[in-house]
Amino acid sequence: MAVKCCRSHDAVKEGDTGTVTKLDEDDPRELNVEANWQNLDSTHWVTYLNVELLGIGTKLTMGSTVRVKPSISKPKYGWGSVNKDGTGKLVGISDDGDCRVDFPKQSNWKGQLSEMELVP
Image (tube, rainbow, N blue to C red; front, side, top):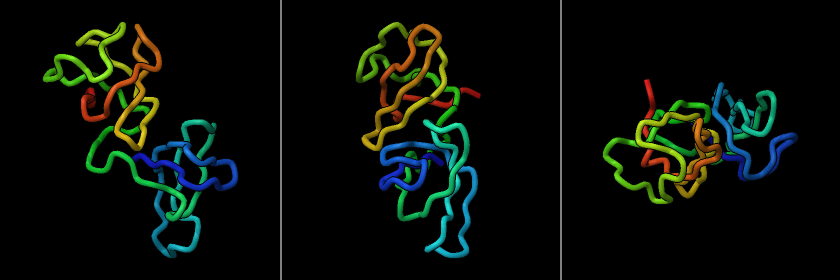
């Protein structure tokens, strides 16, 4: 599950995105979401109140290997140097549905999460 920080907390800054590694559901007032944050080298705990869920209902999370779905003939932001058979690493997820992927032929390629699929 991907999350976005909506209020800075310790080393985690507003706007940072990460992948949840643990949930602590005992007390909603405690630090209870541990995530591997994209801009940090380690996991950090934050409260439920300080995060927004991204990509609910999808298996795509930060670090997933992805490709553009075969049904997409022209991605919203174009192909750039990426081809239909290219696979890359999902490195960014925005709350507006956009994503960033590092493909071998183009780093930081911009697309829409809905245009992507998980590569098994």
